[in-house]
Image 1 (cartoon, one colour):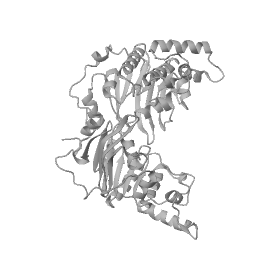
Image 2: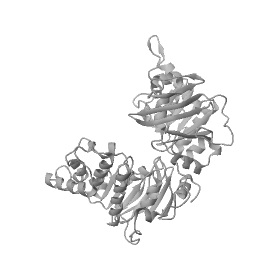
Image 3: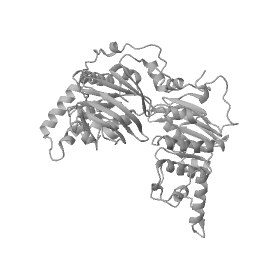
Image 4: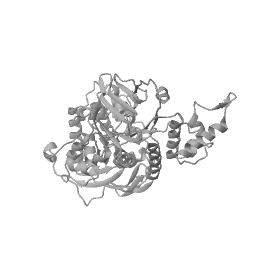
Length: 519
C-alpha cells in the first residue's frame, strides 16, 4: 500500500465528493522542507482528524490552507474549484474558517461584538446593536449555548469562548471548519460540550478538520484520520479500521520487533539507588484542572526517571508543575522530606531544582547575552539582585563549565546566540549545574541537535546521575528514554498510565502502553 492510499481493505466512502482537496502541497523555509507532496481530503459531514508528532507539518499545512503561507507547489480545490487564499481574510471569504488553540477574540468586547467584529450589521449608517445581539443569540442557540451576548466575553470560561469562536465561523457561512488543538486547555466536561457541538455541525453537513494529539479524543470524535510524519503524508485512514497501536506506530515511525540491549548501548551500570533513602522529590496527587490529571511521582538521588509519551501526553506539563512554572490545583509536593509549595520557579531553584526547558530559544537561552552571562543566570537569580556575583567568579565558573562540557565557543563573552544548537544546550545545562541542584529536570535536552552533541550531552547526564543527582528525563525519542532511565513513567492524554523498571519494556511494549493496549 502506498502512503497516499487509504489504510483500509477498500476505498473509504466519503459523503459524495470532497468539500476540500489538497494535493502535492510543498513548502520550504530557507532550504528546510516543511511539507513534501502532502495531500488531504475533507468530506462534508465528517470529522477528519490530523495527527502527527512535533515537526510533522500540521501547523504549516493549516497555515497553507488558511492563507498564512503560500505553498511552493500543489493545488487546493474547494468543492472542485481551484482556490489559492492569500490571507486568512480571503480564506474566510471562501468559507474556510479556523478556531485556534488560543482563542483569538477580544475579551473586553461583548460576545455579540466578538461574533460580528469587522462585520457589524448597520442601520441608517450606525451599528444595529439590537439586530447584532439577536443574530448572535440565534447562532449560539443553534449550538445549544445560552448566555448573555451583551456581556463581556471575559466573563465566560474558555470552553464558552471556543463556542463563540465557532459561532463567528458559522456567521461567515463557513463550508470548512478547522479546529487547531481546541481541547488542549479544556477539562473533560468542556470537551464533552465541544464534541456535542461538533457532532451537531457534522450532522448538518459541515466538513471539519480537527487537529489534536489526544488519542482518546481522536477515537471519540473522528470519522477519518490523516497522519503526517516529518513533513510527509504517512497515510489517510478510516478511524474505525485503524487500531490505536497502529496509529501510534505511524505517528512515531516505529516498527521495532526486538528489545534493545539497554546497558550495552551506553555502558551504564545497574542503578545505585538506595530504595530506603528519603526521596529527593515526592509528589502525591499533583495535578491541574484541564492540564494534567493528578499523579504520584517519586525520584531519588542517583536515579534517572524517564517521562515517556506522545506530544500532549502531559510530559512538559508535569515538569512545569514540579518547577513552580505552573500552579497545581491539587496534590502535595515534598523536597527531601519537607513539604513545599512553589509560588514561582525561584522557589524551586531555592529548593535545589533545576529545569532545562524544551524551548531553549524562548524559555532557555537569552541569545543576546554572552555564554558567561547565560551560565551564571540561575545562580544570580538564586542569590538575588542585591548580591551580585563577582565578575571574577563568573568568569571562573563559565570557563570551568565550558571546558568540562566541551562547549565550542571562541570566548566566554561570545553571545550565546552565535553558538550551534548543541553548544547552546550544553551552556544551559551548565547554567543549572552551577546551582549545584539536588534534582535536574531535562525536557527534550537533545532536540534539534546533531548526533555527536546529543551523545556528549547524554554522557554528561549519566555521569551526573552516578554522582548522586536525581534526574527527571523527558524525551519524545522512546529509545533515548529507555536507554538512560532507571524507571519510566508512561503518560497518555494528560494521565499517568504506568510505571516500569529498567528492562521491563522495549519500544514495542512502550507503544502499546501509550496506545492503551496493555504492555
